[in-house]
Image (cartoon, rainbow, N blue to C red):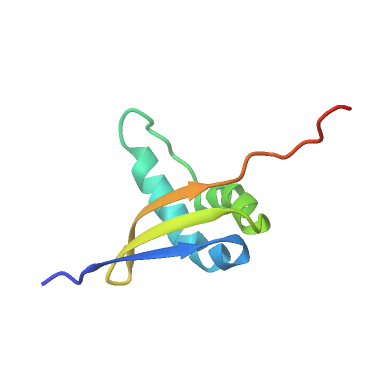
Length: 84
């Protein structure tokens, strides 16, 4: 019997502990057609560091037991000063 899916919301520095699983998941998903991506975990971790570095970032992670099976991410739009 499969464990119930668990949804976890993390942001900012709390994302760091999930980088290995997120990197593997992104490589697995993007390896499929039409992307045919052959990335590396090192590249993915560096890419995902932007989310760790932003206190306002968001990841919604879906776990089946202890296995990460899905994720959705978000970053706030860049804030800029409006000209006077």
